[in-house]
Length: 410
Image (cartoon, rainbow, N blue to C red; front, side, top):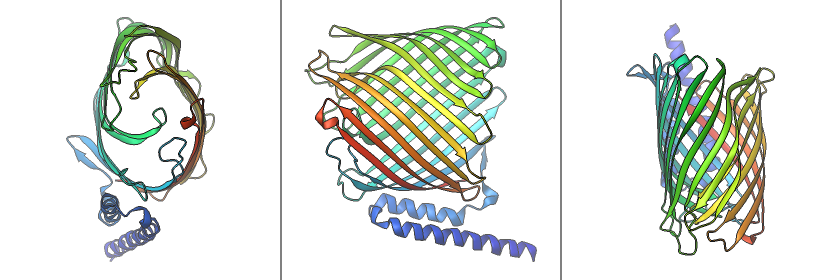
């Protein structure tokens, strides 16, 4: 009788979660009038009944296969990120699969899925965006490491630099080799590739590749220093004749990676970047990269990220961008976690040859709560706000997003 009682109890619990989930969906139905979101909702609801806890993961070719799904609804006060400040309700669904395999010193992973977005009022802005990512890492301990990453993603959303919602196909690739020819000293090789193909009319494709390397020094088993140089040409194709931001970029930097202090891990780099434009003229800036995590006490994490570098936009513009963000994450209980962040961005955007310089400043804040219902289910809510100031009228705006989400992992 014990197995029978267990089956009945599990079925009752699943039915209970299914009922609560269905009630939540009924409240979001005004956001889900489009076919792809309705189908996604049905699939996620079925997952409650069809994914027993005994099958939390699958084994495939000595690796682990995990399925995830996210369903969210939001109210966005500025879906285009510009001064028109058009508001709308949105719904999104993101199912995905990830595969992870570790075999000795080799680790490989593949992630794939789709992101479906639906709007209540904004006609023509619905989208379905696939993505896939693959990584391969070889760790030879004291001799060094090698890693390769390949990514494809279709991205649709509001672009703060372009002041519009745009769709693009993004291709990314990167590789790194660290080889230590002695106990403390070694060499590093870097390579990367980017292709942004914009499907929205009126925007340029942007492509770049990077080659470089330098020296690395191991201060301790957990801390490595580096001195590197990278060369990176960037090209804007199908561009308007009024501007050509294509350039040759040179970057020199010194960095630290690993455990910088007790309970402080991450990476920091400082250097110099020089940009020579194909049509004449040049620009330069300080190069900065910071990604740090500090865990002063259990369940508390402070994170600091900062960067200063060049970029090329699909609007045929060159950008010198600085941004910094401080985040805090606190576990309030075994199931409840709170997060918050504050951030600042400064962007200098120019055409080449320069006919107008646009200067933007943005202030960002956010709060969120996440609640783990059980090992498979979690729910969350969040609020973010952005205030953008600029010498261009259409770039003066504010944007607030209030969201609710439900996540499944098995």
